[in-house]
Length: 147
Image (cartoon, rainbow, N blue to C red; front, side, top):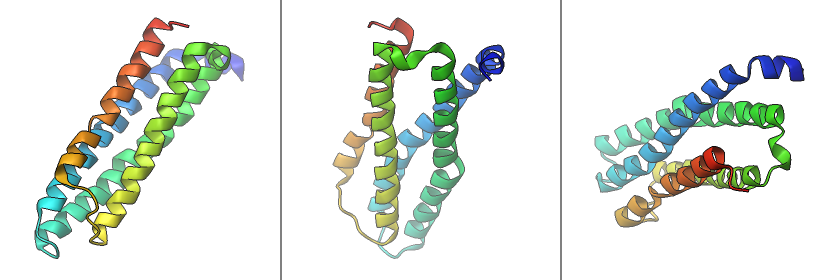
């Protein structure tokens, strides 16, 4: 198996990067959708459209991308022996944090669909910065491998 992984390493890496881009796009889009959703009139046709858009984003882009990112990422980590490298531990922690953020977004989306508007638009806009900060840490760890 290791031979097959090393022969396909660049394809795994390309796929991983492609699906990270999809996942990150969804992580940036969903909180923005929440802002617009919360600005719509409760019970309106516009609110129904936002509920539908959020569900489609989750089911078509976010969750499938998350799964592919994890599968390919773990295969890549195994291939290069990253589990014993310090930089990888911080990268993995950041990805775990993004995964938790993803799960929270899914939960909040479902709460919004039930009519529970717990956060302000300002807070949702601030939350939209989370994936960018995590991405910065991840890219620095992967490219520089500082420890």
